[in-house]
Figure 1 (cartoon, rainbow, N blue to C red):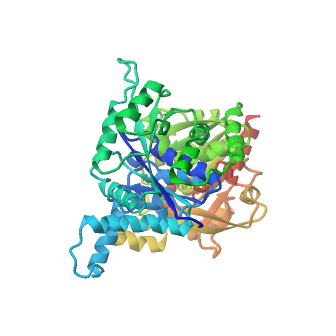
Figure 2 (cartoon, rainbow, N blue to C red; figure 1 turned 180 degrees about the vertical axis):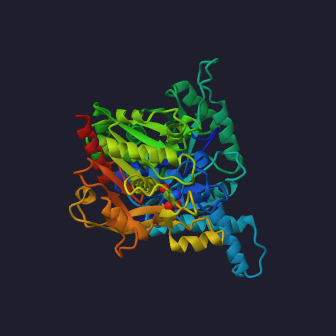
Figure 3 (tube, rainbow, N blue to C red; figure 1 turned 90 degrees about the vertical axis):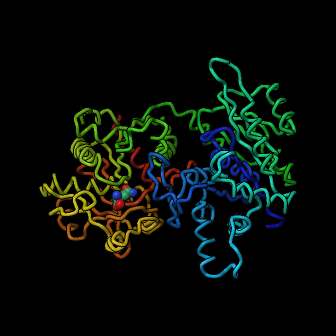
Length: 546
Ligand code: GLN
């Protein structure tokens, strides 16, 4: 680091869900393309210590870092945009911050002082922000403050941002992402909610430097003038960010409207040339891919309204897209509810319409029998299949039931007293659950897998040793491995000590592509580095199609 680090806070107004996360990731990408060292930090206002204990239909996917920290799905977007692993220090929740302060208080770290939200919570937040900056040796830290201006929950973080600006006036920039509604009956874009949100932000002592107006349509001059005048912002710093087809277009659009140049100027950073070629080439590829490839995702979280759905499996969906574009195909991804296969609302024949079927991770017993039925179908019909985590475990259950004829085989997650517990809880996990320790105690984060030569997995990875991220409590029961293998299931990936089965597959002579993985490959798929396993699955899918 040659100069003082710079900090960009991204905050949101009017309502949530308008793309603060993608804005943060895109600003990071833009600065990275200019050769700056960048780190991205997500700040979540909730009291959960991590995102692992939250219901995915409410919160979306829990993204797992290499370190094993379970965090907000925005962190996945950050990794995908930057093309880099993030650290635990790049994520914070109110729960983490408060827990740390309270624990310090218990250890007399405050030496008898009265411990208060201000300054102690704010100090802890600042400490964490600066620790992340230091660890990455960043030129610029881009920090997304979760929630919306006006929430009570994120006030401490906004206060921390204000203090940082007070201490380093030249080095802190506030980007305000706000929503400009176009009420259908009125038919014109309204700036008032944004004006009010900025006024509220002003009341906290913060004046935004740059306003990004999110809307269905571009913002016209008149409205830019209004926001500039009424909110005391330079007009060149009021920018329009209309909806786009793909989130990956956004850094390119921002670059076109010279947001990166504006940021550099406002922060006193050198106006370097940006090198965006690779990203642009990739985005072109996403627009060019025409020939469709149909993929079915079979899961249980399917009855809560479409937009939540795509959030629950966002990393899986993005991973499919990256590999599809890489193979010059346009992915069509359908969500099929596994419960519909149970109550016969949906015929299993539906699966024949797809070029590949994926069963992603999951928990609990709802919809499990439907997933097992779907697995049996794709196994027998030769439809390319990838089972992820729970999807792999259920593939083993299906194999035990229908090939080994252990008709009552099950995971003990579903049937604790199963006579044939082919999937069973990992020993250390049992103790944790007995003690009621649920949060952050699964087998989490990156672990190595040794891959057997001559297998489908080896052909995909082209490596003997790989590392993938995990999030589970159950595993293949070692007592059944011999029988499963004798029946024809191949455990092509194992933990280096041979104790845990990490990948299973059927030989190519039996099935074109039938692979289950105990880990979550989707967490490491990146736009410019599509994941080899997803690419291998889609290659098989293309073959099936022709
Ligand atoms: N419920 C299974 C387990 O805990 C699978 C978890 C998952 O799919 N992430 O092992």
